[in-house]
Length: 328
Image (cartoon, rainbow, N blue to C red; front, side, top):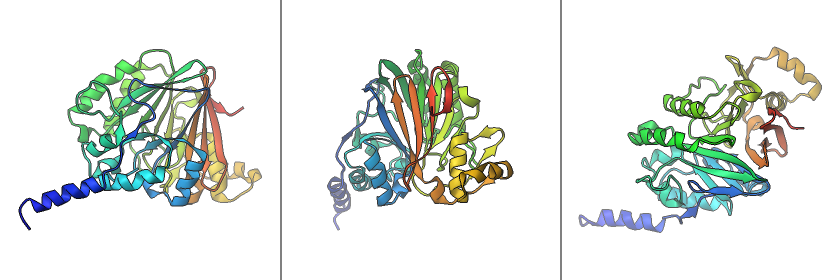
């Protein structure tokens, strides 16, 4: 084979499989408006079955893809995008996206408008507003992969305070978890650094939620009670096991009992007895398999876990007046 034949063949193959550019749900400094803004939070799209993906798409039209969506290459994205149908997309790059695309070149080619405007090289972080019924919410997307970002991680830390001013509630979407009850989980130092900046610039009554697909479990932890931020992990594929409570970091009780009841296959009358006697929990995967819906309506947020088997496992609301509470 001539010396240039192999590189040309590789280039042609990449062109054949190159996916189309897809506009994101909202670009940097943009906004999403509506009487009720409905988002589905999905992690582990790669691991989901076709039936599970169909269930998500039937229920949702705007997807927040919390990583592990495609394996980085043009060929992988070309295969993945058709499985997302006509949904409006907001991607957060995870480990899979960087596995063969460390600098996210293919990722940025696919998702037109992603990143910070005027920041030189494409950024893997951004911010935008959600406006519902005249109420403003701030959504911030963070990239905690300091090893891949290198010096650009410092750029992200410098950018972050600039978007956190104001009085609107803040929701953070990231590729690392701020914390979790999952066994053996420890937050990455880079994520701790990012969250520390967020907490310095956002009052605790404004910081609503920090959501990610890490550490590949289904959980909602409220480590600081009803007025603290929630730690959410969304995982559509087979989840790892959880601990129900560790170091005082309790799962949100409604979800906790709903998943425990499903895992133990007991009636509602028996749940309290189990809750008092079981401290470690390793449910079957199907009990926690599903995704989350995040609906913003005016000054309230409704967060619900949607079970693959059908229906809502649990619901919880957040409001500026009362923080986290069970749905009324």
